[in-house]
Length: 397
Image 1 (spheres, rainbow, N blue to C red):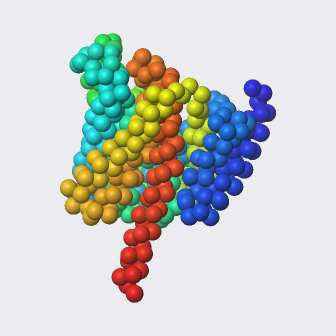
Image 2 (cartoon, one colour):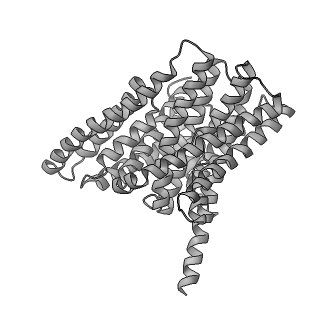
């Protein structure tokens, strides 16, 4: 592919993402829905103008990292600590229920498998794919609704981050049982080590930023250094600890969230995210979609896979939230907010493909889950919040 063709692809993505984002907003749906549909429209599924290139994939990765950094900056650290234990319980249920449901679904289609057999590992791996939660799309929707700092919004973001960490540990255990060369116990150690390093190192980084903020308040060098810190911690998380880079980006944002200039940093970061990286990331989800390898049985499995994956998250996270004293309405929002899948599900699927736990044919089911959950979740969340607002207005009148 000629290098200048990248410019054409970006022009098409940005134009279609913006136009369909505005159209989605006209229909009272979040803009991210329109951006995902834009990728589907210009991608191989419909018009075929753009294919998923390495450049677009990398730009999309930067987009989700910046988005998660922005979420960390918006976090309320006190509320985050307060909701931590509850978020952990919600995340555990959000991993366990989909894991079991996914394994049972696979066995329902392809036969019960004895412990330790090839089919057993494949069944457990299909459940492992279901455990992944993509907080980025839910976050974009909550930001648009102005609910990201609410108790429910904080619980969703906290639970989703913990969910991804647990999901990575589960993934490593599954691969470890199939591949004797890997060491599942080391993943647990590395995960704990990352958070220890992030907390200790983050304290010193925060102190450095306080000095920088005091000496050069409200200057562009602060957000530039902040973004550099975000990228550095994302790299360290992925490269040295095997933790998803988005977790490192989120932690970087949390480290800086109590700065007096945190809103200034956030505004500057949001400009690049809103204008360029965000649309590329959301459109890339649509670009990955292809239905070429589908047959009757795979279509039936894919449909059931999507339905079970969505309801398993709502059931596991929603019921646990209710047990943790959230209202029924808020519990449903948390369950719905946790049902999105995205980049983490793709990472899990790709690792499974490399380990021989997943054939390429099943990527369609994963892409379909990502696409449906990415479009459905923002719409349902908006409906739930709108319903609550109407109830409050009726009560006041």
